[in-house]
Length: 373
Image (cartoon, rainbow, N blue to C red):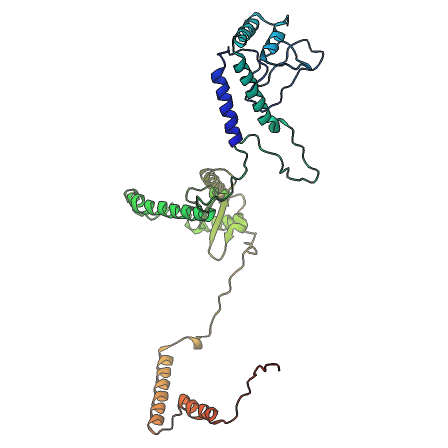
C-alpha cells in the first residue's frame, strides 16, 4: 500500500507541474496504467487504437525509442494522415512542452520512469507453475488491495470468535425488541375463532419458515372425510374412496392429498380444489358405481392395539383386597418390632461384619520402595 500511495503522490505532483493539455491530446505514454504499451503490427496503414479510451493514434511506433515527450510529439507531426484537430492538439502540446524549463522536463521524465518501474511487476505476465493446481501465485487485479497481510491479527481488534459472539447477542436483542414492542401490536389483528360450517369439509395445511425461503414452503396438504359430503350417497362415497386409492386411510376414514408442483401455495391449493371437484364429479357418475370392485387397503398398515385381559384391570374389589394385605403386613411388622423379633439389617452389618473386620489381626501387605545400596 505504501508503494501505491507513493505512486499516486508522484502522479499528482506531476499533474500540478504540467500545463493544462487538451482532452484529446495524442500522448502515447500514460502515467497511471497497469497495462504494457502495445504497438501496431507491421504493415498496418491505419493508426493504432488505444483500448482504454478508444483513441486512434496517427502512426504505429514500431521499434521507436524516444528520449523525451517533445521528440515523440515531433514524430507525430510528421504523419500526413493526422487530422487537423489532432494536429492542432499535438502542436499545442509541443508548444507547452518547449516552454517548460529544463528542470521541470527532467523532473517529469524522472517521475514517469519511477511510475513505470513501480508498475513493471503488474505488467509482467504471471506464469502458472507446473505443480500448482489452484494458481495461488496469481493475484486478483480487480481488487484495490494486494491481499497481503490482511488476515494478520495486529492486537487492535477482537478475534473472529469474539465478533461472532457479538453478532449472536445482536440477534438475541433484535428478537427481544420485536417481542416487546412489535408483537403486542398484533393483538389488534386477532380474530375470533369461528368453527367450520357443515359445508366446509376441506382442511388445508400450509408450511411456513417465518419469512425465510425454503423449497418446502410451497407444499399444501388437504384432508377431508367422505362422510362429511352429505350430497353423496353411501354408494358414491364408497366409489370416492376407491378412486382415492392409496390416499385413503381406512383406519381414520380420511382422504389426504398434497401438491407442490407449482411455485406458489395458492396455485397448489387451487390444483387440489380442482382435483377434489373432479373426484366428486366422477363419484356421482351413475354409469359405473364400482360396486363389484372391493376396497383395496393393502397400502395401509393397521396398528395393532394390545388388548389386556379383563382380570388385569384394576377394580374396586381388587383395590380393597390389596389395601387389606398391606394392613396385615404392617401389623405383623409392628408385632415383631414389639417382641424384638424384627431383624434390622443396618444393625447386623454394624455389629457383625464391621466388628469382625476391626477385630482381625491380619495386616494387609503394603508395597514399599527399597532404596538401592
